[in-house]
Image (cartoon, rainbow, N blue to C red; front, side):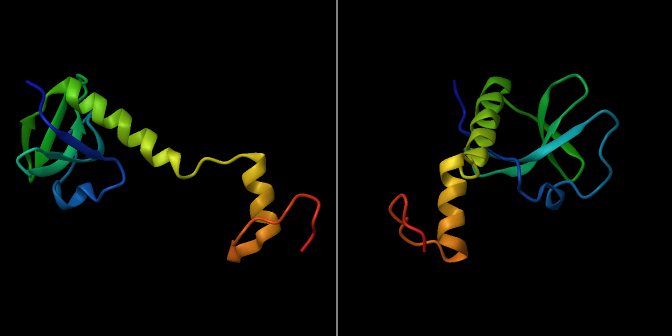
Length: 107
């Protein structure tokens, strides 16, 4: 049975795990389960994903975490994608943005 897992890689995980990180463990952000329980998302040295709350580890469905983690990373990158056309439009419009000018028109 697939469990709804929400991963946020830029969330304040230290709110949920205030103590020292176990040796070989990586903190990846926060995880929220379908029941609303939220904690720090930890990847142990063995590669297992766990939810950590104040020193207590709780196992997570590994495939669901991997899928949600991948979606979270893609989503965070989506808004910051750059291209030559975007850079040129930003240069033309300055900090105020606004409607892009027609090509060949200088403002």
